[in-house]
Image (cartoon, rainbow, N blue to C red; front, side):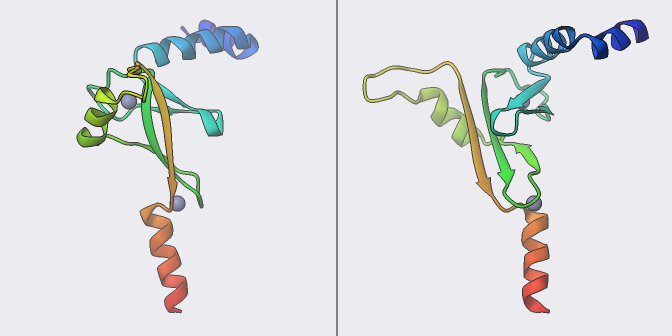
Length: 109
Ligand SMILES: [Zn+2]
Ligand SMILES: [Zn+2]
């Protein structure tokens, strides 16, 4: 196992294959705008190609959105031509709680 990992570091294609596999099973998701990966924090996440994240503009912390209403809406979503989609990669930008708190504190000072 450790041998495999060492080889993986020296051989990027293997790393990418491993990542692809993890993405495929929904263990990790790709964050396109950051070109980074995050571990899935939803235990029953079965949507490797349908992800929604909230990203903090300030500290760039990424969290996966697990909002049943939104997910259901997206599942039923059709475009004007009636095409249904099997995948999406949504990223919502804003200020996370921690940063908001910090900003509020700074304003109050
Ligand atoms: Zn997930
Ligand atoms: Zn933040």
